[in-house]
Length: 476
Image (tube, rainbow, N blue to C red; front, side, top):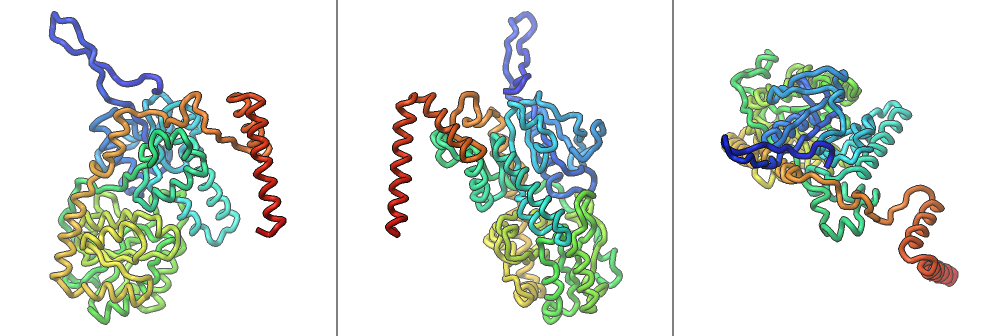
């Protein structure tokens, strides 16, 4: 436990001997590298909701490292005070970090404080799609992601992810870091106490009355069906195929309008994605811009996003056939549930499959015809749309933040350093060159059984290598 430990309170009535009762309240630090303001991106949304849920059980300090050191702001989700990096220290009972926080603040990695690593977003798979016109910048971004994840895998005591496919992926990182060792295995063969699923959830807010989309565009009447792309236009997504599918949609309903919420990312350190400009150019080339394809050039405030979605007919998401899609957990799909919005999505990611199984979505292949026909199959079917909307609301009710973050709440009842990172733990892991690893293993055997054990193990290894050499010589 870090300095300070858990809080104690004095109970008893006047005249009685006071009784110390220990309160299971931990002091928890949460650090996100994203800015926290009215306009929020995924990591900041998650950090704010983690803080809100944990505050019901613990004393929480929420930090945005994007703030100047001593500056403070307020969370738009619950009005909580958000601190700058000056609030980062090691005198907490546990810390929850995401992104590059351990690299930027190595004192956290070097401390003995229990650390939760939030791996809800495999950002290294996103990095593969960024900075396509800048070879050196792209190499630097991808390598930076790898170094960041390797440090997190080495240092973390408890890891969070968003779905089972992600968990399988992250177990590979943990194995490479030597964390799937005999100590951790013997204590927990499934490693459930090392990495667990705690995905994005849904908040308690409800859509407000209003029609911001129709007010924004004179060309959209109150009766026109709206297909809405809600959320960022990132280079690993495929808005271009959706635009190319508009003529197929128009064959089913000539009044269809495709609307993109296409404003710049609230984190100004993130480059403008090239696909946004490509999408606008394509819409103009197809003579759809401003009539059947519209772009809202602002990042919608977090508190307003469901209001924008509630007047849409269908929410749409499309991506490519790559690793980012396979390991994604699209938060915009959760917003569809919050707004009761039927979804059309390309297939291949876990959350779209979950929505489809619940009756809240249709998934399709990644072709222009597949996307257009999927939208066209329901855009005129009010009964089907109503059923999908009710299914979305039902599923959304089961995905509150309180439910999705329950494993984290349980772990914080007694936060502790992982068993293989405790003082004296010997996992046999040795880093460095092959010579360094050999020296480390010799020392381990010397400490355990002396020269006799080293000689015995060495003879066994020599015999194994000799046998392998003979088999290669014989062509086996």
